[in-house]
Image (cartoon, rainbow, N blue to C red):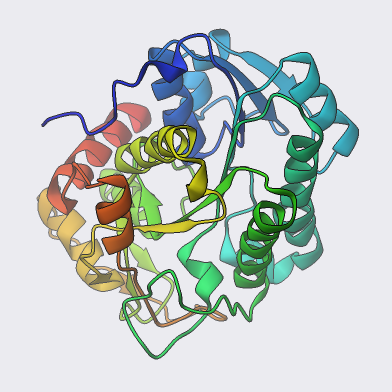
Length: 329
């Protein structure tokens, strides 16, 4: 497949900050940035030895700063001392169930963490691009599908509210302070390196490898977007390059999606078929505070940025299955 990521020369020796480097997306994005010659600085709170970031040795090729994304003094020091030019703000608590059980810590990381990064960037004389990771969850629930970027941000449950708030805070810094911020809104990411086993893709793959019936927490009929992590990483790099080339993009938000929504049960069955398994999913119907149907239109990203995904569902899932087979032995 042809590499969608631009060969732009802006990355060579570019001081680039990534928050959330040990997460699913962070590990792949750091690898792509290192491959382009960027001088990457990663803010890491909790060390995850099994993360893609550590397993691939990326942690040995970047500067790692240990600390909390909500620490204002730390963020200002990092951006100042390393003369950061581009910021990818990915750090977040991303599990809906955890947000329901622990809303305050989720608010602290997802909302305060975002304004802390943005305020540090506002005070920095060197920052030229800030890419803020929002989510399809920022939209909350709407009757009109798929969601476009002009849909209201109206999260109601704790996790959704944090994404709505962080998204709006990013827009406010662009509008009020002319900070060069763009916002990404993705559906559900999947790919090698996701160690949150209660998510449908890694959980199903691990269950099959172990010979256990996959667990579906919902009734299996929730409809979602799923996008492969390498496509997501490419989209973040494209966003930063596009903003560097066109400052008028500041304040804009972009949906990224394969535009192929699928039910949870159909996705699980697709994984089972690819793994040639005869196991039957166990449907527990325990999910709460989640939106039943949620998927995105990506026409704006295609038109304005020239974006398109490289991986269809089968290709992305096959690569993901191979990653977990290697990881789980």
